[in-house]
Image (cartoon, rainbow, N blue to C red; front, side, top):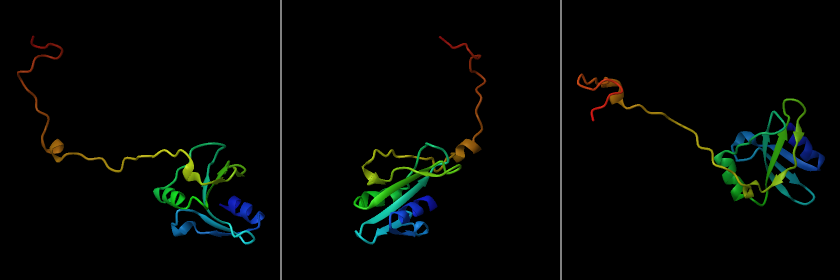
Length: 129
């Protein structure tokens, strides 16, 4: 976040950290000369490459505010942070939905009914023809 804030300030824009407000982006940046507003989502990667994820809220805001939503990725955060080329309108990109397991379930019957053994079953590997 600090790398992006310094970059925006170096371009003469006023930057505000709003990441704790759950707005769907981390920073607002305003160019006082042109009036351009940037809603900036910042993602950091420890290495030189990797995968970044958007939350459903971030993706929704990116789609709703395509005119001013920007995506900034900072790589090598563990060594020497490097800002990649900022991307305007990241909603136009080919995002893939990630589904995660939220719960597992076990039927109560699986715990209360023991496995049944049939005495008249044929020996293992020998079936009746």
